Length: 437
Image (cartoon, rainbow, N blue to C red; front, side, top):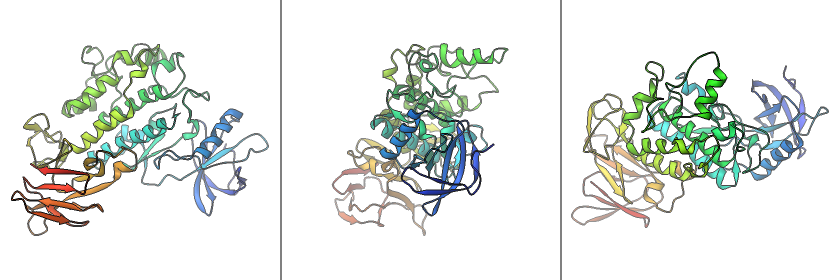
């Protein structure tokens, strides 16, 4: 039964009052209530059992630290302990538009576009980059930690009460299928390096919709616990290991990964092959320090976002054929040719109506944080009178300068458009200069 009744009043450690409105849900650790706090609605997580003083102090410390990024549903206040030693913490409410990540894996909720999928991957990775850069580790990274808006790919991260200084563990061991092998086998406690293993699992599930280690070696027998231990901990093998095909996806069961794997750019496939290399999944934790860091994931995911463009045949998003003159659409399987592209800072960015330019595309000094991966500075638009005429609209406060093939230079301020014409050059303030090819 829930521990708190509707209308119950509590106080935070800072002396602020709150009132329980109703029960929102229940998890393994506690109950989630809607509360009235600071004249608005918030959520309260109330623990089912009395947690240790160490856990309580760490929770208070997380409140003092403040949220690493806007994506975290971070503890805002901790309640006083009641007469039995029970307590909880206050956090922002999850908007209705955000859905549990597990529902996406089960195909009960679908993303509106592949662009939203990539956006979710970017936000998740940038969030943990910021967390780890603060000297903190999450320690229990799994599919239950994320709420995602299917229309935009915007992410909210919950269950941040287990976050602690890297190297300090409050007793949490993580969720099976997501936790690093060396943690399950008791050779290491959860930390940044085990977080990075779990992050790779989350990203693979997000992009390929199957678990990266669940293939033909998965035996549904009389010993499910032993099978799980062998599959994910003692002898893990990536389903697309380039040297060992004994754990390939099962036909008719693991249908998503075999469908998506061939159509992703090679730099994405190679990164996952590195992330799930046998040497980085050893049960003794050897080589765990070599796991892929967030900055490298972000570099690849930013490139993936740049490589998205609309297939001329079906109109769906597919990948720009960077490595070949012609590629195949991942949706309709029709051949697609290269579109017009913007070459800037050594990158090639497809230009089609609806595609967007981001600050980091034109600014080599821009750090990949949760905030700036969202900062749109340009949009490819279509002429309302003639759909064959395209332009790049300046959404930023930077002055842009268009230089035509004849050498004429024109200023374009915020809201103004530069025609998408091959050989046009664009100077983005003092940050960089690009050419349309």
